[in-house]
Length: 640
Image (cartoon, rainbow, N blue to C red):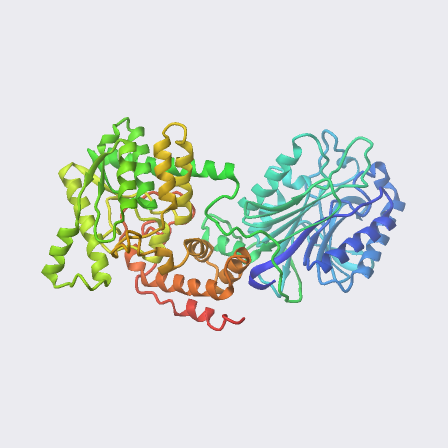
């Protein structure tokens, strides 16, 4: 339960139709197994205590009495389990029968929630036996306990305030207005669905879409427990399709098997997202009735997968589609800007590195959209003190393969003259030595753009903006920054995508892109050593894969530093030790706060993903904010 994670499970017990005693034993056995696995909220299938397929037996008093006796057995057998459980059973109330979810915790019945939408079409005949539930304040007695009966109820955990549970049953999710909408608006962060959904071809995919989609729309966790083995196969087959989703993402699923499907839902993350989204409707005047329960605070071991590359899909097909989409979004942004300004040319400073390579590839795509020749792109390579033959030659080859107009301008003498003017020694390789080159390059690009009626296309990426790894009014500035919301880890995959895509059409272009991908990331501002790059960015600021991970969770999700570190330890367990992760996390927070002044005056650029640091878009932060609280939280964690 630490850091907002609560372990939840969908369970499908193996049952026998109408054998309530057997079913009760299977249910409490499964509950005990869930408890051993650390599950704190368990959802079981619809009518699992009797079986969903009892038919007209539901009208038999013997079955109803057997179900209540079975529940009493379960309550006694699990009175020591610190776990909230929702199980399905028929319940008679005021001479009418209801299809219900009974919510129990430590031998106590917290409430009984009837199904709202009763299907009576196709293979479903529930209206023959069951009444639809309604919202009303009703008390009744079940298993000798006075409890609440109604649909308008929530269950809130006192020891984990962001965990509030709402319940709906099977068809409720298929309805035009699912009960979970009002439950979420009333504060439910976790929805449990007790279901008995039979299997037909294609239904599993639609069911999956419903569950993940509802969790996304409602910004909630959604646990869907389906009936399975043991249900009558007279006309139908039930496959136990269990799903757990969180905010539109499927955490795990299981089908054609009995047992538990478990994962951890991050309720703090859901609460943050609801707080951030002004369109999420919260109803503080909700008339939903709330019942409290306690869960003993405990550490929740993470079993859910945490991707080390949150900006980059790991599936090759998804990654290819994402890369193609981003290239077109960025190119469309530049296309609009070229049209609006009437620019005759687009000027790109080409270094032979990844960022400028991506910028010119996007520019070439935009020119193609405008049906303009590639010669309208002016690629400027500006070698200086740190430029190596490899990067210079790659820049030239890339420009030629794309058909751009190439200008070679050695800025060494101009920088030396400038250093002489300000009294900067050529032997002093300090920040002035480095930034003087970057600003000279920007001046050259701006002036060439003026000469040719063009605009300068920026090359800096999102990761560099987060760390402030750019020279203020140097490579920090342009007239349109196409890479501004693309993190470094994704830049690499975008260039690789183009390289693979062009392999058959232009082998030489593909080859030069491949060599650029193999070149160490460097600003090349310090003199080369033996013809090799002397300045490697990741040696100075840290691995970009870590900084992109930190950026995603610290900024997109607002996670506190300790939680970011915990997720990083889980995601990078086999690659970095705790000390290394802490070192670069501290560096991330120090630089992110100290370098905000550069982000406060960024040029325009297109948003392509969920994270951007534009001061006109997603990120507004004072340039003189202090990082002390964030850094203090990381103190003392080296040995923790």
